[in-house]
Image 1 (cartoon, helix red, strand yellow):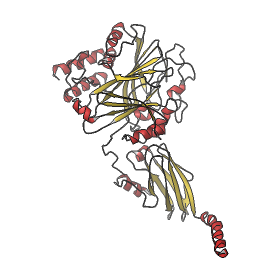
Image 2 (cartoon, rainbow over the protein chains, first blue to last red):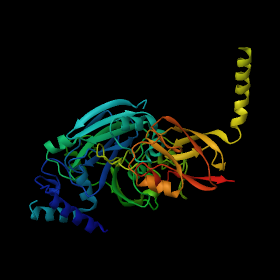
Image 3 (tube, each protein chain N blue to C red):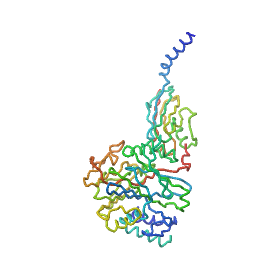
Image 4 (cartoon, rainbow over the protein chains, first blue to last red):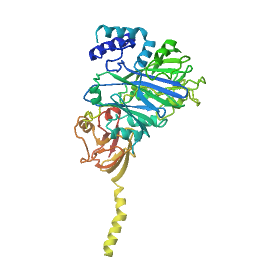
Length: 344
Length: 130
């Protein structure tokens, strides 16, 4: 599907869902202070030893609880509702024409032993729990708390826990969602502040629970002090669609959003990656070195762990990490209390 | 009394030897939604007690049978197994046993039929020879 088509589909979806845009940012903000994004979109930004991770969790409809699990590169010191236009503004930066078209179309139509719990937060209809533990412990906590884990979860959780035993479990509370008049597709953006010197962007988690042939599409934005070096550098799982100094206008707009005042006024590098891969091929993460040393660590991409081979052009290094981390929302789960486990 | 104790000791010494021919214990690990068997080749007439340890944080099933048995369970609605030889549900982090007698030569399948598990690849072959 072309980018133009995606935007048009997004516009049509917004119409059908009745999430009428009422505020700024191209009209892509829902009336109930939610966001509508065509697919998973994440910002992982790093500045002064702190990673800022912004993503959105979309409501899949009333009558069912569901949730996600996201591996994190460190323990967050703060979890809060993200600004109202950060993700959309980033999309607009790399897709200015299509976003404008989508906005216009909408406007014209009016419309373990368990893991250790180390942090809990409520953000609108989201219940967020940050956990520390091994894969088994986090998995046990998840099942004890009503998450229905898919069969690949044990291996994937172990894959992450080896490098960082920190996970974020996110649940939509259907009752609170109803109180807030959330519609299917409405997303609640959240912002995590994570001090870390060893970040990475989790990609494999995007394929959790998916059939190996199912396509995974996602947008990942990186903001770093310098041009980052990535591992894998390129390949079948993602493409670098934009890379260059972040424009003053972009940085100014992002800084103006709620909770984004930490962003430097200038000298930031924007990288936009488009993930497009079969779930079975997305067996690795994204290692990043934005220190200028150009030495991303293969281990941070998951290479060298069980069943994960480095790419042909993989380069093995260990070095101190600057960079960005955490990525992309992990669409794990599944129907909680939905009777999906009905086939024995 | 002495004769009774002596008889018990005799039986205690003799039993392990008896169980080596046709009756045995085989350990099975359920790990990362896969079956890890101590051995997967048996002979007709073998009676095997499988000791199944689930190291995953999710429930699994141990269903031993031919393709028809697997398809039956793939469409089935039973929530728990345990009464039929070779069929048992093993809870997350738990251990269960199931005793099965191999009566025919051929290839059997060991599978888990919780939603998505069989399609994910949670199945393996067990060979039975004469």
